[in-house]
Image 1 (cartoon, rainbow, N blue to C red):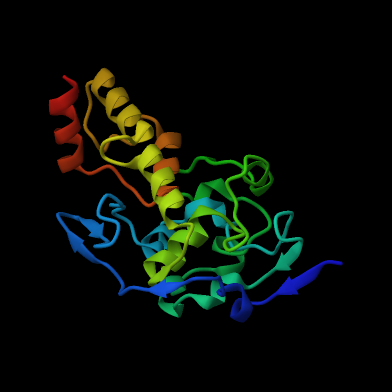
Image 2 (cartoon, rainbow, N blue to C red):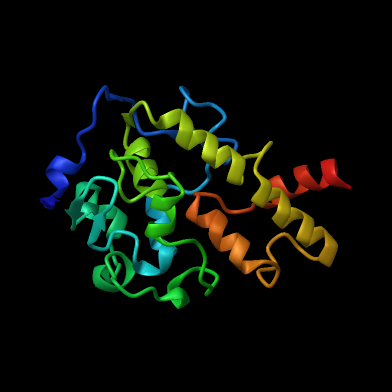
Length: 209
């Protein structure tokens, strides 16, 4: 039988510990216990930038937990959502790609994430839900896997989509912030808590040219 979880019970996982909210170091967030995990966007910034077309924290049924979830965003600070139209920019059933920073549709569906084995029961909404909780200090047995996923996607050394974006900018012989170059990749990186900076671009450029 299907159940339903509210925000109060959805935060509980086994073997959790807590850490303080991270500070910034060299422009990126720094987590002392996971020093290679260096996103440069906070969850609040991501939400305020119109990520996920407004649908991320919509009501869902999870095939992983066989539970229904709604109002999950309410476990996070009100300040993250200040000024946002919650129904359109946070809990919408319809994806409004025009509210994304780059005005494009990016990312896969929850169903695709579940089928790929990327979703664990503790965070039925996926990586961004994990990141929100990790940022707020929660630590769990799933952290290393999620950090590895970030490193493979957007990290400095292994992040193939960060390097892919830099390569496309170099090929186009344009500026790092020319948003006409690969807006979908840029939006995808934003969904993983990263936006390309001039400093990072110049570092990669030096290594790639």
